[in-house]
Length: 401
Ligand code: NDP
Image 1 (cartoon, helix red, strand yellow):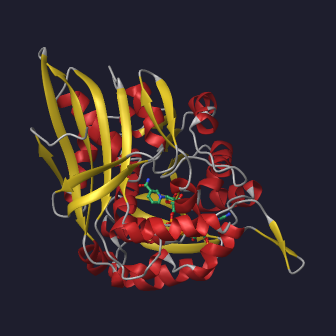
Image 2 (cartoon, protein in one colour; image 1 turned 90 degrees about the horizontal axis):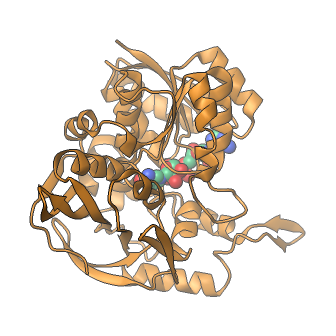
Image 3 (cartoon, rainbow, N blue to C red; image 1 turned 90 degrees about the vertical axis):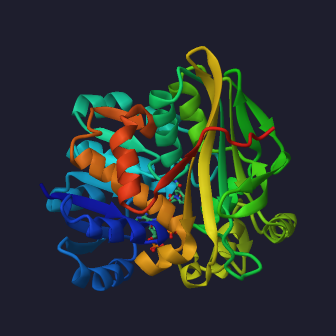
């Protein structure tokens, strides 16, 4: 049966979600693209409508304006709202969903605009209200967070009696040819990578300086890369939802040029989120920096190479120690050929479409607010293979020390 979805945002990730919904017209019979800048929604519609049976409409909406969003939801009557705007909008969109009793899905947890701090507490505080309203919220359904949680639930269900260690490895072996650019929204990306690192050990957060812990790993499809320990949102939920966890870490690869540029920008104050006065006007240095950096959507045609993102699990099965690695390799240029975007937007947008389809088809439908690992991973894993993110597994992987 075909369903109706409202997609908020018209950026890099949104354009992949929309392209994949259009490929999956059996589930997504009608979609509305609503974002701050309507011309971007119209441009996506113009490109995709001739290629699909999905009926696309567009609207302008400021998702921070709850009454405006409520009016749009009441008029369009979607069964789910897919939030692929920015993390700042999460709570406002959840408020609107509650008021209209409509399911909700996002790809990144809430972050207040004035503090670079992201954690689930704000969204988990909606659990009871969503439960009472009988609606489902799926949090963090991109790749990481998202597929990493599904991989963890799958490993727990099929491969282990107990998982003790998880290392999430996010490798981008892509080269866009610019000395410095970010692969998704520059403001969100730089806030994430310039923050202190952290990991969870024995139930406690251990904090590190930014980029303090470095390891080298040889990624299939990419080769050897330097990777650095970062704080990442799924650590918080996986530590609670996966049985027997002793330690969980997240590593992301960065090239030397990216790190040198970032250090320099930090040293001169360009990554600050504290507003300053400039020629009689208040500006936020990081937002100004975003305006001068390449738009991540423009990287698609120039990016060559592959991403390899996955999880290495260590634990026990039938009383014996066991290691297991689940990952996906994605090719930037193949993604561009298929949907006109690079692999970072692709690896986020495809899981968001799959997650929305899981809710719409009733496979992931239960009242409350959930992280992806709290649902049955099997139908999602099948859909990853079907919709362009096939996964691979290794039973004797090289471990990270
Ligand atoms: P973009 O900056 O490309 O797109 C954001 C879109 O949201 C833009 O179209 C923007 O509108 C719109 N928007 C911003 N504010 C509002 C508002 N108040 N009301 C309505 N629309 C608004 O970002 P990306 O596509 O790169 O990222 C989207 C999300 O995906 C982010 O939350 C990011 O953190 C997340 N992400 C998650 C990943 C994962 O693996 N889980 C990986 C990568 C990203 P306008 O065009 O007017 O600016």
